[in-house]
Length: 447
Image (cartoon, rainbow, N blue to C red):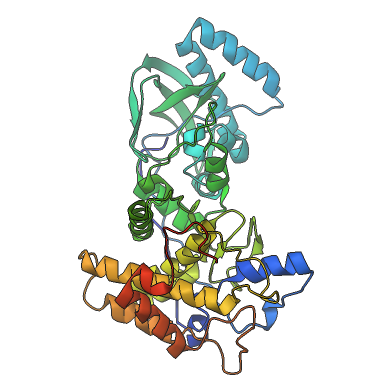
């Protein structure tokens, strides 16, 4: 929707505490579920994991963007039911008029600073990619010193349009050009722009951003509240009941994460069994609510949530890992959590306690995830994807991520000592997936 870009803010970690890395691949979702199932209470305040909050340095906001998006009307102006009826009648009679009407609605939402309502008026495809926090955060920053009012439509053209964020082309798109008044620091001016709208049902939807880099920049600045993941889940089943396939580069815009997903898709294909990707890899830099409960970046580093099959991580934690050790050290964290997703895919219940006979203990599950991370690493190295020293980064992170001295083997949070974790990582690194006592061709891997 907004084709221009602006200077990014830089998130920097001032220093690293070695204690932050001791729990690098902690997996809280499992014991969080045990707390729910068995009414146990876990005291995260007693943990020694404390991530340093980065000092956010705000750089100068770029000058007024040349291309601005129209915004919409609040429910107090027109009730949702009336708006939908008006749109349906107008759209059936004249799609161009309906699109122009929607553009003016969007601009009134912008003028009223109702950015939440504006976000909800995005096209479903955009809702499934761009989180609310990124959109609302951008508008709140942009309108810090600006005022606007309803736009004036100058032209409406029905023409195919491609959204640069995903590369999807919409043949039924409409381009609305307009002039919109803006007042910056008391100085008024009319700014020309255009917005691309696409119909869905009886509504018209708009799109945020013109490129993946712009969207990634806003997520880095304003966080990811997981709203896009929830929206994508609601779109996974079509009207006919068939599962919609979301492109890998859309679900995992970070190539580091997409590469891990590609590895496992290939492994499952070779074994002749279906593979379902995690629902996302979500960063958070402030407390957010997930399907596994509320998480705080001061207490949680990285974890896999069994309920929504999503990997979550603290953005500050990732910054520390990448700046102090390296990018592949970070990939190793993700690959470990991906291992838990694979276990879930194969029928392992990560949320059940280890106190019933015959069940796999948590430490065995954690070390198998370390082993699977090693299996991914050797494949990445063999295919030429790694740089010199990347494996050393993974080994170093693994070595300093062992449990504190005195941790019992049956502690629900136990992962093993640093040496034990290195040993199992190397088993996967030398023997691949099969070296991790995992046969993908079996129906029940948990057995």
